[in-house]
Amino acid sequence: MTIKKTNKTAMIVLILGLSTIILPLYLTIVIAFKQPSEMTNSISGILSLPKAWSLNNFREAMEITDFWRSLSNSLLITVATVGLSIAVHSLMGYALGRNKAHSKFYSFVYLFIVSGMFVPFAILMMPLAKQTAELGLANWFGVILLYVVFYMPMNVLLYSGYLVNIPMALEEAAKVDGASTWRTYWKIIFPIMKPMHATVAVLTALAVWNDVMTPLVIMAGSGQNTLPLAQLNFQSQFGTNYNLAFASYLLSLIPILIFYIVCQKQILNGVVNGAVK
Amino acid sequence: MKLGKNERKTTFLLITIPILALFICFNTIPLIRGVIYSFTNFKGFGKYDWVGFRNYIDLFSDLRVGKSYWFTFKLAIVTTVVVNVLSLLLALALNSSIKAKSFFRGAYFLPNILGALVVGYIFNYFFTYILPALADMIGIDALRTSILSNPSAAWIGIMVVCAWQAIAMNTIIYISGLQTVPEDVYEAGGLDGATGWKQFKYLTFPLIIPFFSINMVLCVKNFLMVFDQIMALTKGGPAQSTESISYLIYNNGMSGGQFGFQSANAVVFFIVIVAVSVAQMKFSGKKEEQL
Image (tube, rainbow over all chains, first blue to last red; front, side):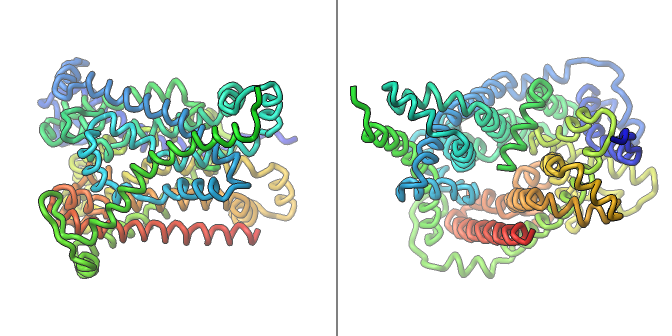
């Protein structure tokens, strides 16, 4: 074995590259704390630290964007979608994965749902805006329902792929003991699929939390906001007050940043698993 | 208690049918309705008539639609190339023997978890105020005004923002690819004189081609559907030079009274997405077979 030396070129490239990530975040923080009178057009003025670290901008931005309500809407939609996705998509993945090899019906349903991945939101957007309005679903509940449908192709593909590695013998043993298929699923199969639940949860949560288009099209008239939607409305009304705007942007980034810092490992694993499978 | 084959069959049907019904209700039916609307002159409200293939014929002679396809494909292709080159370099650097490896990996993935809309707003400020101030200081005349207000350069700004976020994702996929390459491949290659660029070209890259394919498919599909970044940076301007297909469908279809016409546009867009995806999968399938 040779002892590995630190690759100096790689270190230099990585440190330089890191500045392209840190700089925008640094600017966001600095601008969010400054007062409009501190904003100048020179580079040193732009990069300088604020004179006082006052939370006034944040207080005002919270009031204008109705921050807590947008935050709880976003949380509600994300948590409900993730919970429903894990329950519904894993069941569907199980039913299709166990039957598609020997049944024409199930293999057709599987292909039918998975090919939904190719349907761009652009073609569904206008009919869905009409349809949700007709059904009285132009609200957060409708948005959750739509997400469960939109992420079904991807998640069913992941779940039924994972099931291939789970031996049938486990289910057969439970059957001998007299357990029904439904019970066997929840007692044995569902817990075994835990690693895939983590992947699905991470992928779905990130996609839902940051999505703008679906709530924009479906909830626009409901008077309710999600966090990204609140930024969009804020921008069109108070876009010229950059300090307030950046305070609002920073506020909307904080929850996901905390989530990332706490669950970084699971998030990285989840994203890689989801993409590679 | 008897639990035979029938019990299992019934349970599976009871699971499948309601979920399938939900899927059909909010995916298949709107898709069919979209196709139906594309043959009408529906404005989004009021009465409408059948117009046959009129929308489709108009679509191919509409300059604005043509421009949006040109912009979207230009953006998707250039961004895909830029993102893949940079993320491969980054992945190689992050996979080499470096200090604080997990810190760097964590930090480089950060852009991907942030919402595209807010990232777009932050970069909007950067392009509008900071870049011109910087250009002023160094003395680059071309960059003294915001590139976002220049019809021939605004797309570069959008490209930068798309790339900034996508590089994070692609890098991590390349890293997991590089980790599948066993160490002894390099050792054996080293004996045959394969180092540096040669090592990459003949050993590393062929072994991570499946990951390259994943990244290509992900990139092209995501960038063809670009929306949030346009909304945050340019709203399609200046002079409609950065209208992506999705943005045009949203803007003119939802509020511009072109519900029927933009439905036809969306149907064509759908066919284009399917064609591109199928072509990519065929192509990458062939490449992997050759190995």
